[in-house]
Image (cartoon, rainbow, N blue to C red; front, side, top):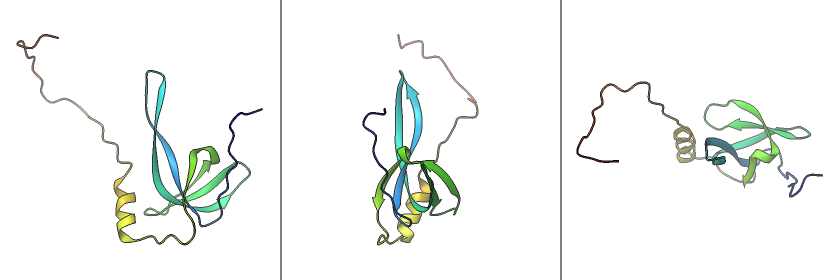
Length: 106
């Protein structure tokens, strides 16, 4: 039996946040809540969510969702700009130059 299990209580057209694993550090998981996404479908254990900017749909397990707002939420241009800007992960492709600071002792 699973402990502390929450029953997902989302309706079609509700808005939710989705958890994203950003990094694992010292066996601790660091999650970030991103969104909002709109619920467009349901299954037994997952929900189909719609990205507000790209229109992409994906299936997300209920345990990775958190309620954000109901159907009365108005998606504004400002919300779309926020959603579009979040979740950007930049990676360093290569180091062009480096030097050693001999005056500093580690």
